[in-house]
Amino acid sequence: MRHAIAVDREGNWPTAEAEGAVTLDYDMRQRRRIRLDCGPAGPVLLDLERPAGLRPGDGLRLEEGGWIAVEAAPEELIEIAAADAAHLLRLSWHLGNRHCPAEIVEDRIYVRRDHVLEQMARGLGATVTQILRPFHPEGGAYTAEVQPHGQSHG
Image (cartoon, rainbow, N blue to C red; front, side):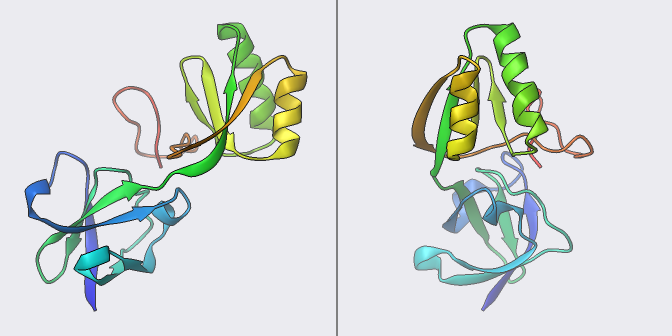
């Protein structure tokens, strides 16, 4: 089995040389060592020194030469829509008290489906919609990688 030994971020690896791709949900993109099914490219052992927080568009460098592209799998989420900026802050504060991974964008928050969180958000006046999309939650406060647009992934 081939080994993926390093991660190069989107834009820093030769995407035209990708031999295959692997589609992973958020939890699987946080792993250090795991067998990956890369479709026609076959199985690959992800074997990193530490979890890298893989993101869509990243490339896994194979020890034997070559690359595997990382893609994000759609996940069952809820979209919590706020009425305005102050409402978004209030919703974020309440979700933060629940210590759940959350992706925060302009006027919305995405979290994994959870009936308790859905009820809480509705009770706070948010519009809640169940959706299927890739999940890119904020990194922790001590995450080293912060994206240029201000969104942390880690």
